[in-house]
Image 1 (tube, rainbow, N blue to C red):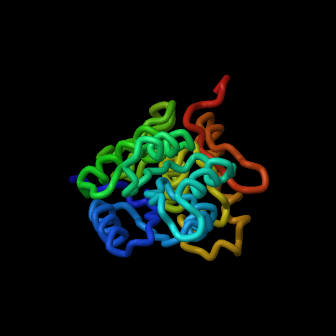
Image 2 (image 1 turned 90 degrees about the vertical axis):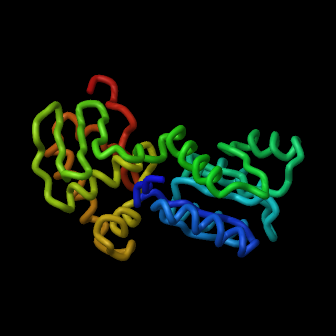
Image 3 (image 1 turned 30 degrees about the horizontal axis):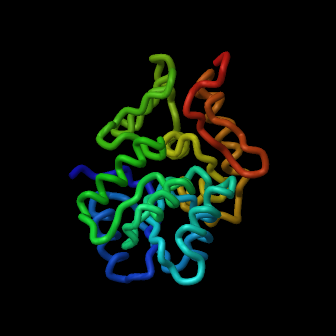
Length: 238
């Protein structure tokens, strides 16, 4: 199986260490960046802080149940778009219906096939738009072409010269398109910096990046008081 984009973060939430180890191993093996949580509250805290691409969520957790975690994720503006795969020993149809009704993207029961879980994770990420296509070096969004392998960018067929940092910033925004990226998170991802310093650095680089991209620069949207989001499509009139 081909490696997944290294920027895709998966949060595995389960209070059974053996399940956590099994799921983590198979997801990390193909390239996903995996974090774990053992309680519902820990999962919510991590999701709000890191905004992973997808959460593999057990239903039976100590304290806050998986159902409650899912409900709170969908009620919170900052986490409502995170994909969720329910993974549980509860096979009853009412549990499955409740999970899907609350906004789960898929529902897998234990015992499970690790290969099937990996395939379902990839399918969810492609379906929800939370992942750049696996095995695709070139990302095409409207007039913008980003070649990850060649580290090159074109707008309407014309080459755009970017610094390595500008390219990494653009690639991060494009691969996470449709999701808001806080300045602190971008600092950590692009500059490997602590999230509480030099947030103005992000603003200056985004401004330069927009200028260099021309009309395609409008696809980088400012989310007031938080950060930036790359639009999944060109704004009307663009």
